[in-house]
Image 1 (tube, rainbow, N blue to C red):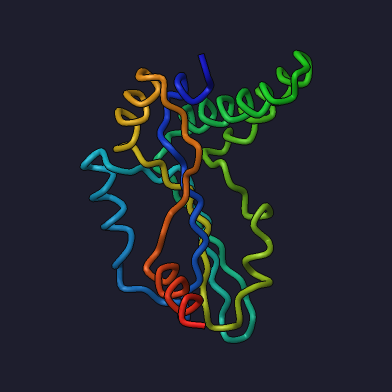
Image 2 (cartoon, rainbow, N blue to C red; image 1 turned 90 degrees about the horizontal axis):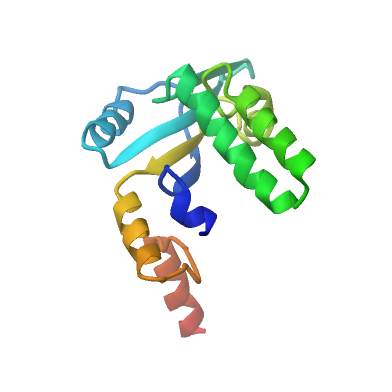
Length: 170
């Protein structure tokens, strides 16, 4: 049985965002909470950084996981990475490393996303979010049960379609 069929979590999307400001009015977190409450999506981890006009950095982290869930999630990720190593000792080490990564209740660490602070100009903000798509778990399980496997898995955004049209016009 494939790792895809046995994964107890849904597809994880890594979303990297930039904002042209450092102050927010509470537009985003309530929507993430609504998605969580509806069982649609869950915030695995979020690192948010603001850079003041004078270049001072502030980091904030948020997760819907408890510390125990973060440890378990980290261990599962480590175990899946370990499967690809094809060495039992290295696989075991990957599982342990993954579990240790979640001990603080987060999968991402602020020092793992240092490039955010370097990439944004003063007076702006950026975020890296790991979002689990819970709605996709039953669909994935049905596809796997029917013998299906993903050949491709991409998101198509409206801007992608505009780019296709622009390329076709040349």
